[in-house]
Length: 197
Image (cartoon, rainbow, N blue to C red; front, side, top):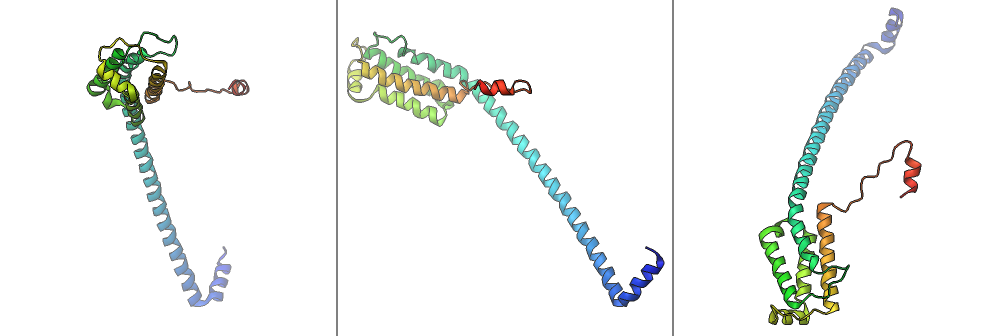
């Protein structure tokens, strides 16, 4: 601005107007400084929270990976125990004595190796397997026939086998072993890949 324009503004405002303009400028400068500091503090806090979040994710991922690695061999032992009741080919030689021993083996596994590793859902499925082994008339018969060679009936076989199947599903969920492989789509394959789903 030229000196003549500044003199014209000062003359028009007068002394009180000029003082108001100066005070307004000072207040505006102070407000701007306050907002700048607040913005820097806010950005710092966001950065700190982001780093904390990343650190927590890393710890969680590490713990989850270690837990899965520890569960795998323990779950494999339980998985093998359930081979007593396959769907295909169906066994026709399973006795009440074998079912009693199956229940004992599961109990030993639970208390000496694997119970600690089970997720809540897998633990519930494990308890359902045990309950199905000892359900109804079979409980009485299995207790009396600890080493009985009496064959189990089809309904009992299917009931316990179905509970074992649910337990195996929960074990694979715990291990994330039945997840679909990551679906990668590149720039040249996106249309083809999406159509193959």
